[in-house]
Amino acid sequence: MRGEVKFKVGSKSHSLRFTANRICDLEAHSGRRIQDWADELSDESRSSFVSLRTLFAAGLDCTEVEAGDIMDELGLEEVGNLIGRALSLAFAGVESADTNAPGAPAGKRKAAAR
Image 1 (cartoon, rainbow, N blue to C red):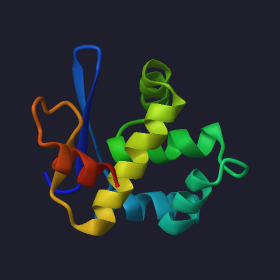
Image 2: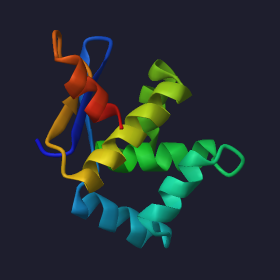
Image 3: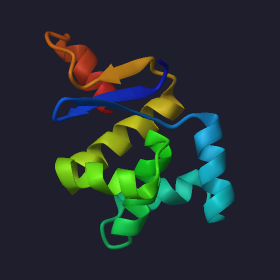
Image 4: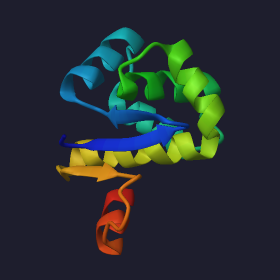
C-alpha cells in the first residue's frame, strides 16, 4: 500500500502509514499541524514520550496503549526511525517500504529510509 512501512515485532506484522484521514484525525484531536509533530520529533530537546506514542498510534491506527506496548518491544530509537520513514513516504509519494523484505535491492532500502 502507498506510503506504508511494514515491520515485525516478534511474529506479529504491523503497518505504519500516515494517510490523509489519519493525519486529519491527529490534527483535529490534538489541535496541532502535522508539521509541528514532525518538527518536534526531529528536535530531541522538544520531543516527548507522549508525543512519540501519540504519533505512532496515529500511524498504526491503534490505541495509544497498544502503540506503547509495541514501543516497549521495539525501543524508542527504532520507533522514531519508523515514524520518520512513514512520514517521509506520506509526503514524498513513494510507494512503500517493507523493512522485512529479504533481498530487497540496497537502493530501494536506502530510498525508503529517507
